[in-house]
Structures are given as structure tokens and as C-alpha cells.
Amino acid sequence: MNWAAVSGKKVLLSANGRTANTVSWIKKIINETRHMPEFVKQTKHLKTPKQVFDWAYNSLVYEPDPEGEQIIKLPLRALKDGTGNCVDYTVLQSAALMNLNIDHKLRVVSFGLPGA
Image 1 (cartoon, one colour):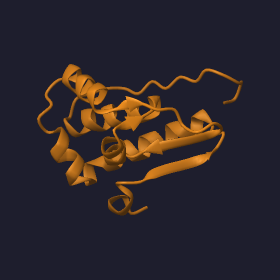
Image 2 (cartoon, helix red, strand yellow):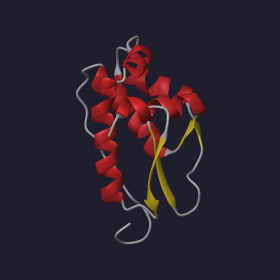
Image 3 (cartoon, one colour):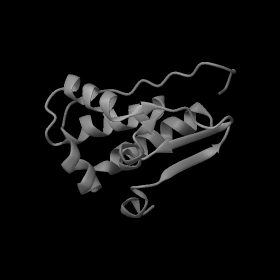
Image 4 (cartoon, one colour):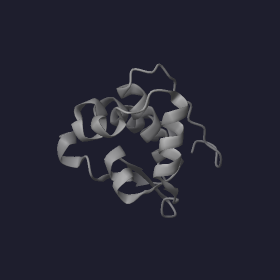
């Protein structure tokens, strides 16, 4: 996938996206942000995990996905829109931490139907 071409877009996983699919896409997107100079430029002033959290918290207003859809916004799209959901906050913060070489782990939980 040409990430530079889609850096301002959303990724629609599928209707009723499964958690395993979501986690797989989150990892791909986060890993590829190192190739997005615009995103790196927007995060280079951050120095600590707390600063990353505060920056993400103040950059996005919570907005759920449409019913029955799992959409993941790439970091630049979320920043441009100024909105995102839990997955978008995760992607934004993890991508910033990775670009800043701050060691971290992802923990994604799912609440709802079995197998979701």
C-alpha cells in the first residue's frame, strides 16, 4: 500500500470489523508512520509519554464510528478531522511514541459479542 498517498484518508476495515483485524491494521499503520514526514514533524516536540497523551487528548474530540463499521483513521487524517474514536487515539499515541523512540506496548480490549 502506498502510505504516502493514503496518509490523509481513513481505512474501512469492514462492516462489523473483528478485533483481530483491527489489531493487525493498527500495527501496520503505526509501523508505517515513520515514512510520513508530515506526522514526524508534528510530533518531534514531544518528549514524554505524558506529553504524548496530553497532545492526543487535546487534538481529538471523541466521535464513534458509524453503527456496524470499524474505521481506522490514519494519524494525519485524525489530526486534520480533529475527531476520532478509541482506536484512533491508540493509533495516534502509539505512532507518536514509536517515532519518538519511546518503548511502549499496545493493549487493545474488546467489549461486546464473543468473537468481536
